[in-house]
Image (tube, rainbow, N blue to C red; front, side, top):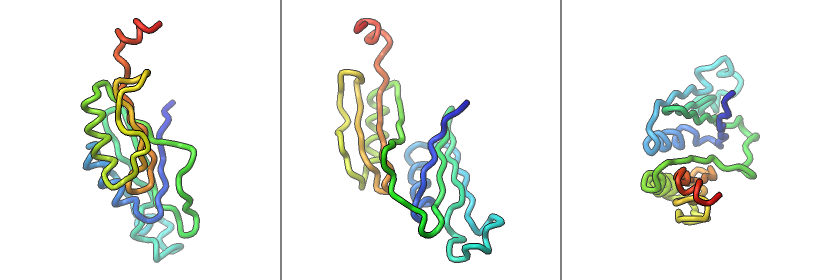
Length: 141
């Protein structure tokens, strides 16, 4: 089984996923509503994204633009990225949070050598975490 984060946007999915690709890398596939059998149902929405998938080594991030009138801002969840090295995590934190709102600065915590929380400029809440080294975990048990 795989658990995959699926985000919803209010018309700016293309912009968000092009930004995420510029920061995270990976392969980006997008399909507009106009390229689907639903093209005639929402002609004013045909340039919006019916499905986007950003794929990296062992991860996927998916999304779409909601049909008109169906979008509601994300609440009660965070997209979470985990890294082995704090410098790599900090680099991604700094890049993804540009233009957004940092709610917890990236810093060392009791469970992580580097952790931070922000809402990006597209409204997506993120947690960036660095895994505690195995030798440090063993010493705390």
